[in-house]
Length: 65
Image (cartoon, helix red, strand yellow):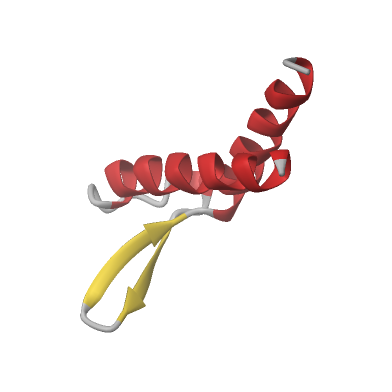
């Protein structure tokens, strides 16, 4: 259950950071932000941010046990 919570937090953080940086036209180098086209919408996403944010929040949840 903690992993699902951590992945949710990672998705929210990734979408927020990628939206701010990607809307300025930057890929932010190692963050690898790219635009994903869904129907008529453009969504910015970054897998490195998602994985690191999910790992960080999972670690914090394990420390709180």
